[in-house]
Image 1 (cartoon, rainbow, N blue to C red):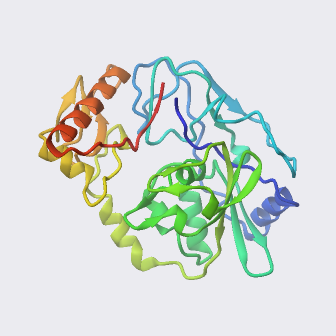
Image 2: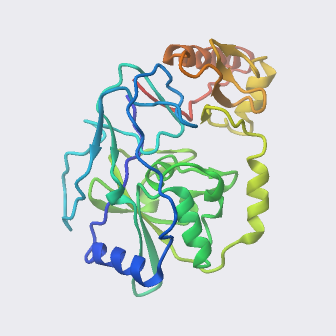
Length: 311
């Protein structure tokens, strides 16, 4: 079962109007090319980044924006659909069905006023680069690391994405899950994951002045040791007080491949595909299981997948 984040929509009063007003009055990122929806292709390639296919022929697009202000139950839930966002950090089985993404109707950024401060509301299909540029343009801090993290806000919130100690949860105000706004502290965000269930439709962030230009170079350096070929990104979560990449390297699996799928020679915790078009989901799963088995045997540590598996 694939339990990944979806995307968000406004369920607040005047939210759609605020979206339009913001874009027209501030002329925010009008010329920024938005990421297009992923295409359905016939392919056995399951690794999801760098133009590899993740869909077969069972993909759904949700093209109707939800405009209701109060919704207690909706049908677009993770029990019925695999809401997969941009497909980063995702491994999809050939038999996976009911894969779904939300349309660009959910690609927005709105500034909301309250008694204490401004809140930034972001639709879940808003790409990370758009959010990064918005925060930079308006001198807001907290999401500087998004410059180097691919994906949409829905998926990034779902996995509490981040770099080192900087992560989504640090500046998150609330999340809209299945039509209801939930305080960030009650969502159950954990290291690279979320304990709560349901489809994410929107997120609100604290608008704190002071964009941190001083952090950009360090975030850039964190990405220099990551492979540039087709990849699922980080395969395993780091166990307490250790690093998954180090463990994989010590057990001799750095540069290990099965039919072209395996652990990068550049960064051992990156599951990459050198055999695009021929490598299979089974090859990837076998490589993952070998790594888990060897690390367990040598260190008595159970590696937990960071990559989400849809089967």
